[in-house]
Image (cartoon, rainbow, N blue to C red; front, top):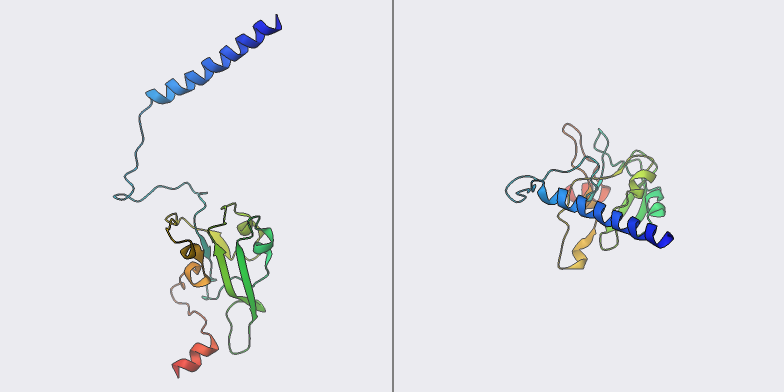
Length: 165
């Protein structure tokens, strides 16, 4: 008797699966003309990372290393440097002198975004990350920095100031 119930249960499961398949087969196909039209993303889409700036144009990252610690793929590399009286890069005592993300390893889990206390790192909507050369998949701070907001002035590093004069 139990075998009969198992067979009926299995047949019911197969019929239910086929019902979903036939229902999807009969629904209209949705095609996005990607190269010709801009893609449509869900709000929570996790694309390439962006290092945010504050309203004054300073970097929000204070090199606390929490994003690197939270990353399960160990793909974030940070080197910290101290802000000085003449050179102010971020609002904190330190700033990220080097901030690299290795997209060969990144799994786009979002743990780095959740761990950041200053909301310095976010996911953008960039999705065209494919490459034939894996060395181009290591994104540096300069590649990820958000543009300076209008009316704000980006901090200038002392070496750049000396070279300009």
